[in-house]
Image 1: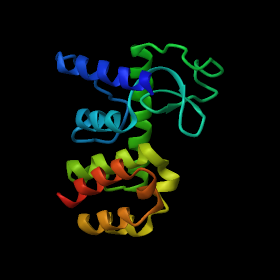
Image 2: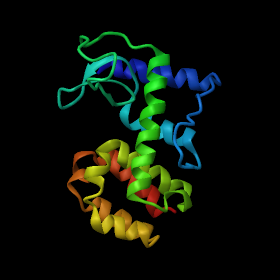
Image 3: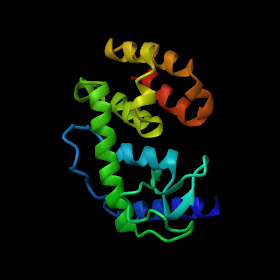
Image 4: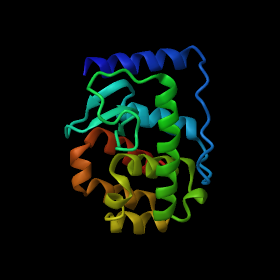
Length: 177
C-alpha cells in the first residue's frame, strides 16, 4: 500500500510540474476529455511502477493493468519495477480497449455529454464490459438520456456496495449532468 501511495504522490507531483500527459490516439472513438478521464481513473485505481498483487491476488501494475500471458511482465516477481514508459504504453492500449468496449455497449457514446462518457468508460475500466452489460436498467436509463435514473440504478447494485467511494463519485457526476 505504501508503494501505491508513493507512486500516486510522484504522479501528482509530475502533473503539477506541468508534465505533459501523453495523448492516446489508439482509440477510434472520440472521447471529449481523455486527460480528465485519465486523472479520474488514476484517482480510483492508483498508478504503481512495479508489479503488485491486486485485492484478488492477481499480478498487476501501472494503472490497474492485470498482467496477461502476452505481457512481457508475465511471470515476474512482485515488486519488479516497471518503467514509466511501459506504464504509459500499457495505459494507452488499455484506454483504447476500454473505450472501444464501452462504445460497443453504448453505440451513442460519442454523442453523450463529457461527464457521461467519463462515467461509462471509468465503469468499463473498473468492471469490464461483460459485468457492465448486466446493468440492464442502468443501460436503459443511459440510452434514454435519463442521467438521474441511471445514477439511481447504479446505486442499486452490488458493484456500488463493493466500490462505494468510486461508485458514489461516478453516480454523483451523472446526477449533475
